[in-house]
Amino acid sequence: MAWMWKRKLLIATSLIVAVSLFVVVANYSEKPYFRLQPMFRQGFSSHWMFSKQPYKGFKPHLGYVSIPKQEPLKLHCELCSIVSSSGQMLGQAAGVQIDRSPCIWRMNNAPTSGFEHDVGHRTTLRVVSHTSVPLLLQKPHYFFGQGNNTVYVVWGPLRNMRKDGKGIVYNMLRQAAVNYPQARIYVTTEDRMNYCDMIFKKETGKDRIQSGSYLSTGWFTLILAMDMCKEIHIYGMINDTYCKTEGIRKVPYHYYEPGSRDECSEYMLHESAPYGGHRFITEKAVFAKWAKTHEIKFFNPSWQFS
Image (cartoon, rainbow, N blue to C red; front, side, top):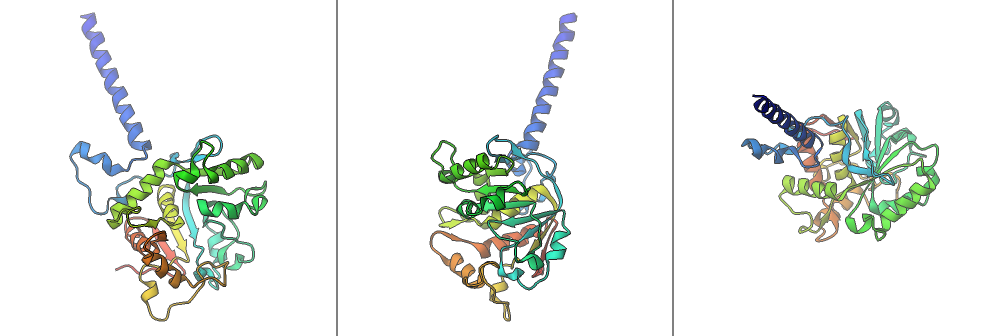
């Protein structure tokens, strides 16, 4: 009888271990929740994106790893204010309101100096395109120096971000981490890049590569914010119909580049580019969809939902 009791104990222990492993995989896998559903013969609705996933702010964000330690990003924000680089920020006097937010996100090399009245002072996290890294390195002490506690999350294709010594941008970031060891620099993993591509295809029906387009920094920013922030406020982002509306503000593409092409002209140019363009207008339509299932609010200008 003793051997039967030991056998039952072994089976029970195995079941506990199996269930524990499943929970870990379900919670920490980079794969989206809907891929687990077929195991339970459940379907998923057209609003699968983020609507069925639990808020993951307190968990490590495994798609973003630090340089040089390769540790996952750990950051939680109850409220994130994402400040667009758009010329829509000019003249809005939103700086005080933005600075009240516990977490303030910016993109690429968008400055605050000289624009504090409109965009605020502080920066908690900055999402950066691989193409903007050289711009940051023109002012390395300002962006990565001792007094800067900003978290940097850099995205880019494998050819620029590979870690075997051939990734040009990764090499730049690794050297910056050596020069400024206190800097908090993270890079987006290849799996996470593929995940963002997959979301684009699921939401638009278009393969990003086959359609000849590049995802924008705003796309990567909002996907990360969905995981990290309980509530999201976005400043200075126009919706997908704005440029077709009469009486719109004609503003520069970037608030810090007054002589640049106006925003709507830039958007139209990219949307129709046969290759190498960002699909800004398409992305904004997706953002509007996500805002219906997540705590996202738009300011300067505000968005109206039907």
